Length: 393
Length: 144
Ligand SMILES: [Zn+2]
Image 1 (spheres, each protein chain N blue to C red):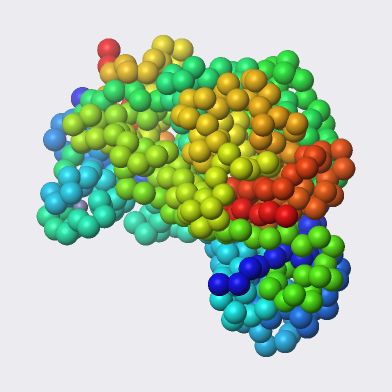
Image 2: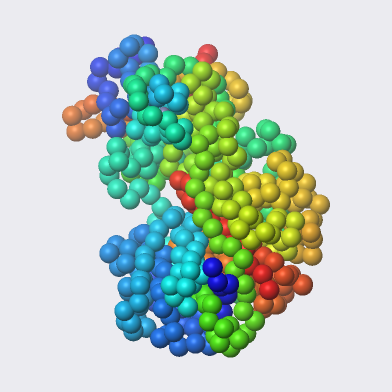
C-alpha cells in the first residue's frame, strides 16, 4: 500500500435550512478543495460521494450530479450511505483506491440540506424498517436515546448536570472562533443550566440540531501534486467499524438493547478506533487534536472513554480539570464540535477530517492548537456505523 | 384488566393481551439464547446456527433501567388524540431474558420515577380509527 496524503479541502459553511439544492453546496466545497490542492478537475480519477438521503433520486446519486457540474470524465463514481459516518465511508474508499494504486488522486465529498421540519421515518413498512415502529408507536425522537444513556451514566459514574453544561460552554467558546460554524454565540454555565429540558437530563443547548453544510477532501499519492500542495497531510489510517454482539447501548431506531454487556458501549466506534490505532501504530496517548461527535454533551464524555483517551467514568474529570481544552493534554473539538455546527449527515465526517487537517496545517487562527502534529477524527452513526481517521504532519 | 375488546395495536405483532395480561411479543433464539424485540430484530451471537427461534411473551413486569422525560411532542407519524407532553420514556429490564425495552410511561407520577423501581407492561390509547376502534401502543407504568 502506498502513502496517501490530503492535498486539498473545501467547506461550505454550516447553516440552517436553505432553498438552494444540495449540489450547489457540494460544488462550493469541491471548488474549494480543487483550489486548495491547486489542481484541475481533470486530475480527479475517482469520486466517492456521500449521498443526501432526503434528496430523492438526485440525492442518492449525488456523485453523478456533482460530476456533471464540473464536467463528466468517465471516472468511477460511487455513492455511499453510512448514516453519520457516511463521510468516513467516502474518504475510506478514496484512500483505499489511491493506496492500492487503482487511482492516483481521488475526491471524497458530502453535502446535506437540513430537512424543513423534524427528522422522521423514511418508509412505511414496519416489518422491514424498525424505524417506523419507533416513530409510530415508540414516541422516540433521537435525543431520547441519548438521554436514556446519559441517565445511566449519571447513576453509574456521578456525571452531573454541570458537567453536561460545561461541554456546551467550552464548545461555544471554540465555535465563536470558527468562521465556518453555524452557532457563534458564547454561552455561560448559568445560561446553559437555565435552558429548557428537551429530554431530561439533556437540555436544549446540550443537543445539536440538524444543519446544512458540505465538505470535500482530495487525496493523492502523486508526488508532484503532493509537492505542489501547501503542506500536505498524511493519512495514517482511515477505518470503518460496526457494532459488536452484546453492546449494551440503546441504538437510535432500536426498541431494545441487551441488559448484560458483553462488548464495549458504542462498540462500532470502539471497533473503528481500535482498527485505526492498530493500522497506524499511533495510540490515544500520541494524539494532539481530537474531533469527536458531540451530538449531545453525553457523547462528548462517553467518546473519550470509548476511544481510549481515559478509563471508563473518567471523562468528566478530564473535562473538569481542563485536560480537554486547547492547550490541555488533548485538544478536543477545537472546531466547536457538532454543538456549534449541527449535523449535516453526509458532510459532517469530512468536515471533522478537514478541521483536523487544518489544525495540522496551522490554519485555525484563534482556535489553533499550537504545535499539533497528530490529529484524529471520530464519527458516530446510527444503527452501528462509525469511522476513524488519523492524520499527521 | 380493563376491556380490551375494542382495542387494536397501531402496528401488529408487538404487544399481546390474549392471555389476560398485557405483554410484549418477543422471540427467543434457542441456539444462542438471545431475546429479540421486536421479534424480527434479530440479534444472534456470531456463529449461532440460528435454529429454533420461537415466539415468546416477555414477563408482564420488569425493572426501570433508565428513563427520560420528553418535553416536546414527538413529530408525525406519532399521534395521540390527547396531549401527552411532557411524557416519560422508560427503558425496562426483563432480567431473566437479559433484554431492556423502551416504552412510553403512563399512569405514573413522573416525579416518582427511580431507577430500579418495578414497572408493568400496559397499553396507551393513542386515537380512535375509522372503524371506531381504540388504536393503542404498548407502555409501562409503575407497579402500585
Ligand atoms: Zn441465535
